[in-house]
Each structure stands twice: as structure tokens, then as C-alpha cells.
Image (cartoon, rainbow, N blue to C red; front, side, top):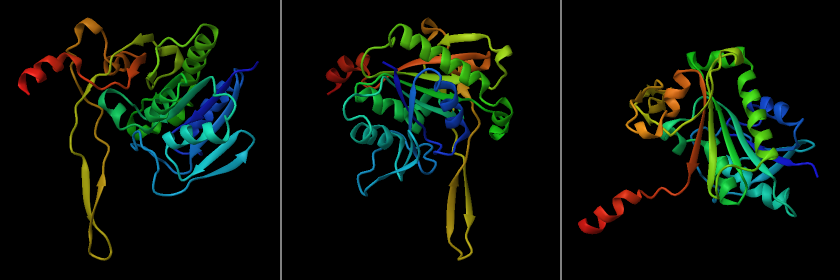
Length: 262
């Protein structure tokens, strides 16, 4: 029986990254798309609880969820589209921009994969790192990202998903042509160097408003030497970064210390 892949994203149903992913995966499986109507970048792992949501069928196996988050898309697709059998895999992306380090906690792209693994479905989140305000992504046409996704999905289908339950693969693609790629690197999530980038403006009615900006992609040097590369380090050296991510946020090493403190 032909495999079925559910695709979602956080850039919206018109995103070129989404359509590149669809094109890459259609030869491998039956592809069903459920994507947000509007861009939902940085919406994190949120579900919509205060208003009803509506599926809008754009074409066969392609829906936009008006107006849902990536987590909504995965959650509700299991009710409407996969009543009898869950999809074999969820792929979230291809996101326009990196999702590395602690940015994973903000990411709607990662959240689509998170919701999938909570529902017992293997999942992959894919993000295209970009520079120059992502103007380079259009020139690259997601060539390397498409090649990487196809290779990883084939490996999953030919063998099995490499992680245990409630864990997903977070993949970041360097902004380069395929010929310049150094290969794959299994990584840990690095430490993003955060600023407080925002702008204050005055609207025509004299009211102040704020716009959160896009800080530079800077990071701290990794202290996890025994765990090898961080995702940031891998991208800097033109590797495709593959990070295993789990949803248990407990810091187990601190439990004894906290017990003594409490």
C-alpha cells in the first residue's frame, strides 16, 4: 500500500517552501497538505481554543485551515482526513528561515512536528537557513532542501523512523547549492545569542506601536564538546544539520539539587 505523508508549515498555504516540499515528496507517497491560511511564524506549539476553524479545499489533497496554526492543522486533520488510519509520516516545512537552538521553542514549523509525535506519528521539521533577509532562498530554489528531504524520507520508509516516541527530527539546510554541501551532521541544539530587536513607531492617530524585528543569527560557542557539533556550527561549515528533539523538558540532572533545596 502506498505510504501517506501529511505536510504542514507555518508560512502559509502559498509558501514556495511548502510547494517545493510537495514537489519533492509526491514521487514517494500520497501527499496530503493542510496548511495555515496566514503566516504563523513563531506561533510555537499553540492550538486554537477560542474560535471555530474551517477546512477550505483548494484542490485534491490540498487544504488550508482558516485560520489555524500548524498544530491545529495536524490535530484536526486526524479528525477530518485520517479517520481510519493515521499518516505514515508528517513533514513540516520547508520553513523560510532557520529553526536552530532555542528558536525551536518559538517555531511553528517545529510545532507541527511536535503535534505529530504527540499523536503517535513520526515527524520531521525542515527549515531553510537564509541570509540577506532570505533573498538568497529564491535563487537557491530549495534544491538542497528538496534533495535532503527525499533522502531522509526514503531512509525512513526503507528502514524505520530512527527515534523513539515523542521525538522528532529537526533539520536545517545551509543556504548553498547542493554541490557545495559538506554532507550531513547529527547535531545538538545550540545556544542562540539573543538581542531585543524591535522598533517603535507612531501611527496616523498618534498611537505608539511596536514591531518585533529579526535579530542576527548569532550563537554562543557550544559547551557540549562530548556531543559534537551544534546545529549552528554545522550550518556554518555547510553541513545539513539533523537534530533529534524530544518533548520532555525536564532537566533531570537538577532534580536531586532541587530536592535538597526545597
